Amino acid sequence: MKIIERPSPNFNERVGVSGPDILIMHYTGMQSCEAAVTRLTDPASRVSSHYTVDEDGTVYRHVDEAMRGWHAGVSHWRGASDINSRSLGIEIVNPGHEFGYRAFPDVQIAAVLALGQAIVARHAIPARNVIGHSDIAPGRKTDPGELFPWKHLALAGLGLWVEAKGAQDASLMRPDTGARVGELQRLLVRYGYGLEVTGVYDEPTEIVVGAFQRHFRPARFDGVADAETLAILRALNATLDAVA
Image 1 (spheres, rainbow, N blue to C red):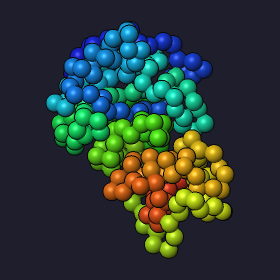
Image 2 (image 1 turned 135 degrees about the vertical axis):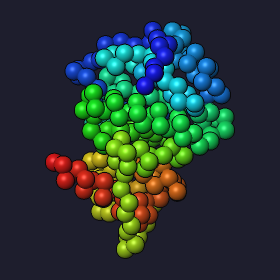
Image 3 (image 1 turned 30 degrees about the vertical axis):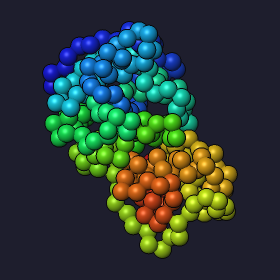
């Protein structure tokens, strides 16, 4: 894979870790690749990623993988909050929801897949830690969004995906309370999401469920934990039991 060097000054040393164990997918949310790359390499912006992948499959490298890029912002995954120290970031060129969100071209996804596979192999990143910006910052971020082909990547060995149905489960939604809500919250936390287990289906729970759906059930991401959402969440947690 050919990689074009477009270095960014926006990085520092990782803190408290020997190397990355999370891979985060973003979309650029800007109107062109050059606009995104310019921002990611501008010292005044105070943001960066390790790579950017253009719609034609061109890959740009901004920050060495050994260093801490500035792409995650305020975020949480599996009990950690300094996600920049724990992660590598790939920005994927797409105008995003603000400027005309659209499907990702096949050639672009092929490049993301090849780059991602190489990264997870180099750093032994577990499949459950291949996630989106919206997974680590629900309510604040929606990228890479519901059109990102998580299933395609997972079937090729990058990330996790399950198919599950749950016809017997009644939906959970605001303002439900009780043991079933607590179970939902515990399963979301166990998988990695940042959420307080209260037994109350409050606004934060709805936001996190919506982020989970955007990744794992993008046909509908309304924040209502319907039977299919619950079944997928349980199945994903069962994969953790299988490798424990």
